[in-house]
Length: 134
Image (cartoon, rainbow, N blue to C red; front, side):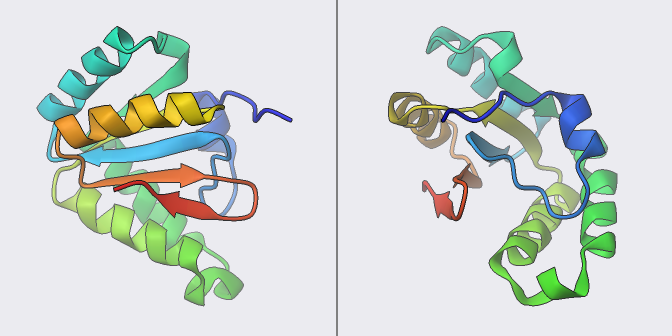
């Protein structure tokens, strides 16, 4: 079963820890590099609906809130560890992408772009686990 392509509204309305199954979350040094990565993803065959782009200023308050409201049960798990890592990157000015990646081929194309633009992180979300791609 293929994961559903998420929208910004889906992400905004999701409660608790961020877990976008079938997607890859990427962070880049700043918003300008993030924009260059978006252009490269489009050139690699991704359409606008596949790519959710978040400016550092947009991501930071949302991540702060997610970390703050994470349940105590998640306080020691890998998911909250990732969220804290994301928050630290966002507070340092990182730009963000959440890219729909339903196939291994899509993930490979995303990983190539991540490497080319020196992504600070690239995490693929599976149903039961997350995978660091870099």
